[in-house]
Amino acid sequence: MADRERDPLVLDAMLGKLTTYLRMCGYDTAYALERDAEGDDVLLALAETEGRRVVTRDEGLARRAPDAVLLTERDVADQLRELSAAGFALELSAEPVHCGTCNAPVESVDRTEPTPEYAPDPGETDIWRCRDCGQHFWRGSHWDDVADTLAEL
Image (cartoon, rainbow, N blue to C red; front, side, top):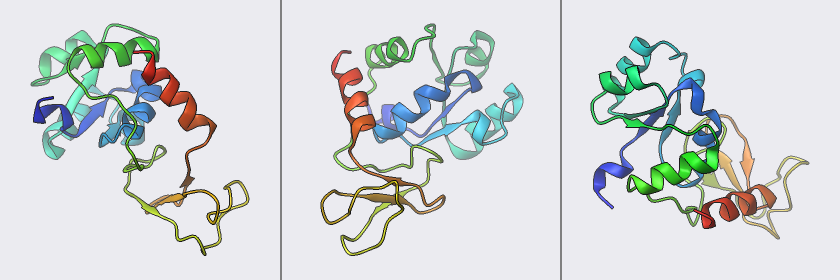
């Protein structure tokens, strides 16, 4: 895999579900709707300012963005296949790196720390917490579903 395939990414407003998958695969992935970057000019400025590679389904936007990745499919599994064919490494990280909700870094929760009611006991399951939004993550059914999807690529 070329180093450029791990460049930070920015995904256009049509690729929200794909954003979560890429974050779970360890990619630093900004999402247009989370960054108030719905317009092409704003998204391109964000990509340039932050050194992000544009991933889009918009042909016009792809022509304007250096080294953009143009996806043609609507279904997230098909989009993942397109990215895999383009050389993107698509496997789950051993440990989460980026928050699936906001893309901020995550940190491991100590086994003695209290966690929200929705999270399992950290004494029994590895838990991570987003440093920015506070969301807690663990390898549960969603992790398994993503792993299954990626295994079928």
